[in-house]
Length: 135
Image (cartoon, rainbow, N blue to C red; front, side, top):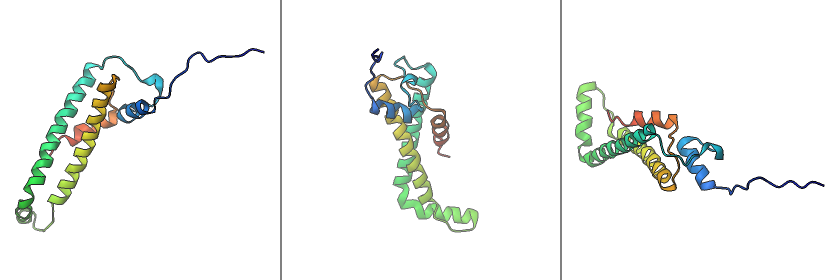
């Protein structure tokens, strides 16, 4: 009787699998890499950091301007002709974008701390680039 032995034993790395899966959609072990990140991925990290700062500034502005919400609504009422409470949807949308970008930035920093190659998924790149513009 022939007894087969496994060639290699892999320890389950659930945390690392979730980290690389959420950030870059690389759920399989063979898709992960400890190589250095490419210059394009470093550029995306800088863009993500810039977008985080821009969204944080925009959120701070709309959070602090709450005393002038009525003035903003009157200004829009005079321009459009109907009354609507615009600052609340703007604040909610900005808070959601900030939370999303902050989550991606935390995942990117975890990739750097663990030593994994940063490979941001294209869907995150499209969303990060589109939420970075406050206007």
